[in-house]
Length: 126
Image (cartoon, rainbow, N blue to C red):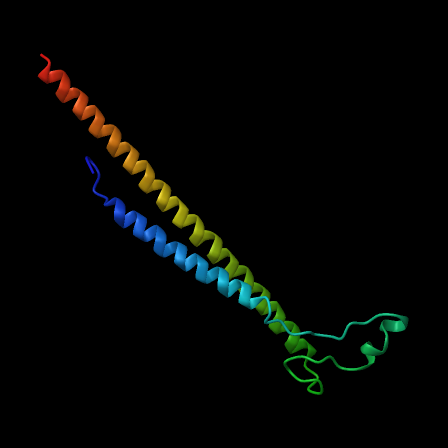
């Protein structure tokens, strides 16, 4: 490229690698959605229904009495999901930005070449 120290293919390769990372983060984010555990049984009806009288089934056991642990797990999971979703968005945005920079550099390079060629043609005509 005339006047630039950046290889356009390097920019495109970096954008592609970042898009692959964004895709992986999206896959991870989607996989986390199924990792929650129920904290309590669905209540309903009179005084929360019969479900409110019995401990909930969750990853920490029906009889272990750990609804606070299950709630803490779900809270932590929600924070991780938010961070992974943010990682996906920012990585994808960075990939798109690098691709756009490559396009702008390419356009600027072509414009510079045209100006140099026009200037050269003008000198030859004199």
